[in-house]
Length: 381
Image (cartoon, rainbow, N blue to C red; front, side, top):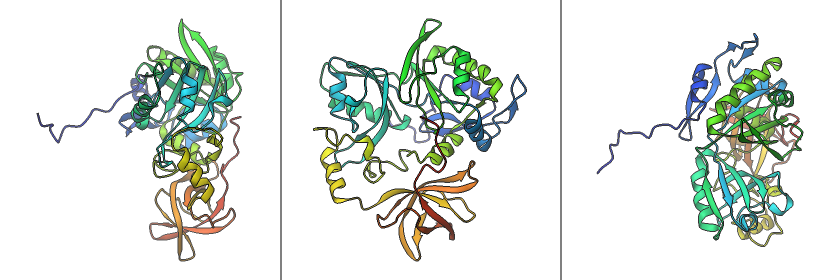
């Protein structure tokens, strides 16, 4: 039967969808998921301002505490005898550097060294790991791993039965203490506990540059935990935070976004993510291509650009040195913290930190200076 060309695939929703609607969220299509980009301004039960748009939500995370629904992210369980060693032969980073209860940032590359996805690996045991890839790439990552990992190692998609809530900001420890969840984990580590008899992984990870946590919760308990975190954060002017502020927060840190600053045509060498590659490992996907690229030197390098003039850069804008093009922006936004335009850009290797360049913003030159991210200081560690 021919498919109706006018038919569209319904957007997927997280278990917190109704709560987002009740909070006045502006919902958008994000990788096939109906997700909040920002929330309407409102008063909490304690009289605190909540939501109110990207800048207000961004500021809540930098100064107090913000709560994100990131349940659209992938959740893959990799388990079986030899699972850690097998996965270590596929992803870029060296999993032998971390042990049970720790997490590691890594990438899955193609044979040419391009990045299929960047992800976090949580090591439960040598035979039990959890991976959190990006939402739009989760299916591709699962397929590559299933084709690459030998039996008895298995890959189980837990996308629908687990949700993730990010609790980020300088007041996040006090907020989770009030919920009764552990907060003394070191950065990039996690604790496994139970709440009402159901498991929760409390991870000292995040995508904002602030001290924070990500809670991996079974779907049936996600709403109760979300409500408890918002209630516990009342004293710290907690705000629900959408994907708009998530993007400004991560850009201020210089964290790459797959599909913009990383992709199957942008390698870890070009993105300056060599620190997340186990160069001494004997095997991982894309190893030979990446080693050759490192040896030869990249033809373009990801750098930060700070606007010194008035204007806001966006992705895919030409970066100029005089009349010569030296690259293109990959991410760009207004920094609510600095109140200046900032960008990440793939630039010619001859460009150095401190250089003065211009960005072509719809035909108008915007003066920028090359800087090394992060654009603002991080308290994540």
